[in-house]
Figure 1 (tube, helix red, strand yellow):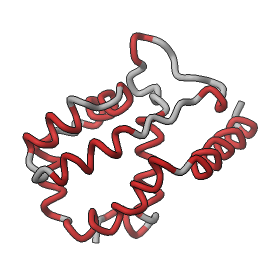
Figure 2 (cartoon, helix red, strand yellow):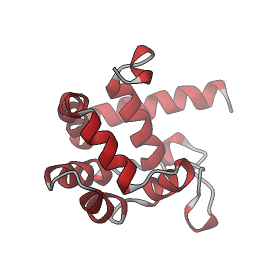
Figure 3 (tube, helix red, strand yellow):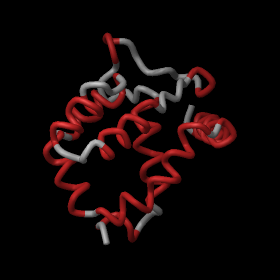
Figure 4 (tube, helix red, strand yellow):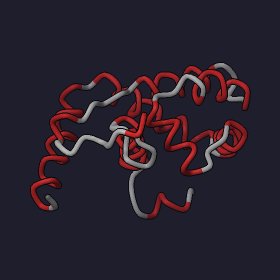
Length: 134
């Protein structure tokens, strides 16, 4: 069991990370611009999900993750990786250490990349948060 699994489901964690990356979280704003303040203006970039699984299927090696996932990643993913010290080597090691975990989350992560209704629900939750914390 991963340490964070006691607190949240794997899908929620992955969705959170994907949304931080997809919405170009202000960890490292691209081009010095600030992140959208209006939830309706947030863009969900889900290409990182497909890139991750392509790198995984290509052998889940550090080289595969570097070229197929990190180098090809969105600005949000690149900023997240920089801020959190995510490298291809530690990603490959984690994937190899927890193969069942990654096998279990795959269907739900792939669903996120093509499910507009789910993305609309996430956007609605952003609106609610914005209303609570203007």
